[in-house]
Length: 257
Image (cartoon, rainbow, N blue to C red; front, side, top):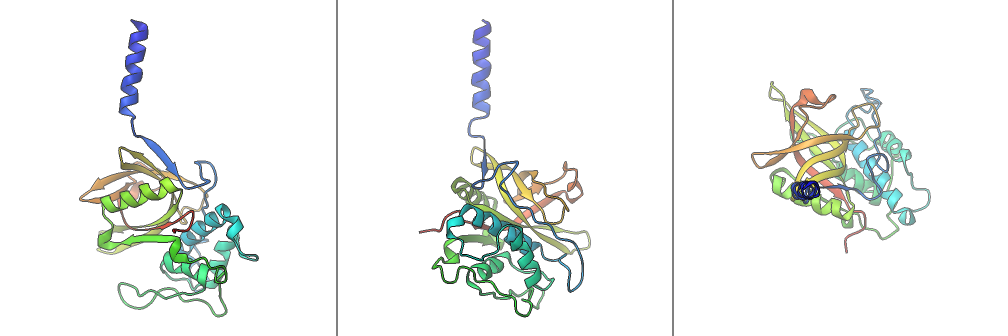
């Protein structure tokens, strides 16, 4: 009878956990392999408090170059040097991480237009990149993204599952409406996800604003056809409540054929 009960419990546990898994970017575990550069939070022209987009691009590039060291041209900044190069190269304004990644590979930077008018961060005089310009590696073989109405719970789940199963890494844009109507937007990196039966239940993210090198586990909930980070029980982010994910970019581990 004892052996039968043990077998029955094992079968029940196995059924309840069927399909549950944690997926990571290539070379990443909960303890290592991810990058989490942080801003100094200095304001003004020489500061970096608005450069979250540059930090997430730097984290992705530092990770990608570590995984693809044989493809990295000589004299290309690596590791923490990537973030320092971005910080020194761009004015302290918001921008698009995708454009920053393209600039790193091919040297071209198109200043995106802000939703409220005007343009995003400008390059400082003399700043340059384009480290892969002569390599023949096209950046469009590496990045894929979704924005706005394209980003639903279904499309985002599909992109994250496909990407992490290949070993890719991501940045996502999150937004929160404040009581006064203003919209708070921020960019973060995703290095892993928990999924069960093809549904994402949690993400592992790092944040340029937390002033520490830490990987945070944040539960995910689906509401009204969108995916939200459920920060309600988190010691650091609890005050934010639930924050919608409305933008994503995946950086492929290997170029698409």
